[in-house]
Image 1: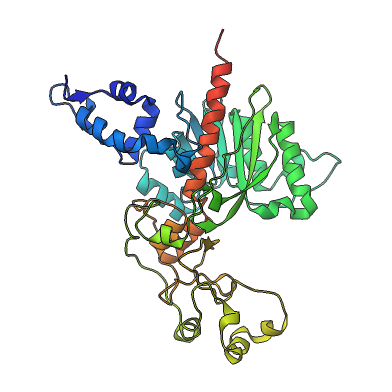
Image 2: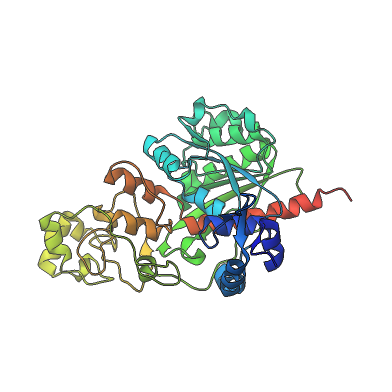
Length: 412
C-alpha cells in the first residue's frame, strides 16, 4: 500500500468531492506534499486516515447543517468587494472568485495582500467593462449601496436608475449573464423611500431577465457569527433556470463574545494581540463606571446628565451610548469606527474599544487575513464587511442551487 495518495484517491477514501478536499486544504485542515519521485502534489495516506476520522463526521452535525460540496467549479464575479468578507466566505463554501471590483485603494491592497492570485479590478465600477466575463461566470454578487431612484414611469426601468450604483450592478449582470445574481444590503432597504427603492430594483432585474426570490433579511447570529448584525439578501435567478433558490437554514446555537475572542468551538486560539484606538481620559473615566452589558443609564445620575448633555432630556433608550459588551452575549453590530458615541462597543473587562483583530474576530475573519492601511482604514474595512461565516452559509446555498441547475441541464 502506497504511503502517498492523490487528491482523487483521498476523495474516494473519505467519500468527499475533490472540491471539498481543496477547501479543507485551503483552511489548513489537510496539507499536500510533493511526492518524492514524481514531484506531484499528494497527501500522506496516514494523515488522511487519522485526521479525517476526527472531523469528517463533525461536518455533518448541526454545526454545519448547510454544507454541500460543489459538483463542478463555479465562478463568481464580485462587485463592491470591500476587504473580502463575502469573497472569503464564498471561497470557504467552495466557490471560485475569478474577479473582484472595489474602488477603495486600501481595501484593494488588503485583497491583493491576502489573495495575490485573485484578479482585483481597482477603480470606479462605472469605468470598468466586464464583457470578457460574459457566459463565463455563474454568479455576480456584491453589496451595492442603497440610493434613491428617479420615478419617471409607473414601472421603474434601467433608465430611471442611471447614476446609482444599483444601476451599475444591474448593468454588469446584464453584461455578464450569470445564472444567479446576489446583492446584499442593510435592512433599511426594505423601508427606503417607503419600499419603492427595493421594488424598483426588483423591477429592473425583471427587465434584464431575472426573477427575484422573495427577499429575506438574514440575522448573522443565526449563522455562526457572534454579532447582532442583519443583512438583506436580494437574489435574482435567470429566467431560463428552473431551480428554486433556498436560503441557508439558521442554526440553533448562538455564539457570544467569549466565543469570538477566546479559544473554543469558533476559533482554535485566543485572539492575537493587536493595535487599537484608545479612549480620551475623560471618556475612559466615565466608561470605567459602566458594568458589562451596561450602558449610560447605569451611571450615577449626575454623570448621566453631564455625559449625555441635552440628550438626557429627550427620552428614548439610546442603548448604544456608553455601552459595554458582556462576555456571554453576541456583540452589537460593529461600525466603521470603534468609538462612536451613539454606537459604543466597549471591551467587557478593559475600558477600551475592541482592537483591529478583535473587530476581525467578531466579523469571523480568519486570523491570517491581514488588513492594509492605517488603523482607521482597517477598522473601516472590517466594519463595512459581510461577516465571513454568513458569506460561507450563503455560499452553501449558491452551491446547492448550482449543483441542481447543472444536474437538470445535463442531456438525458
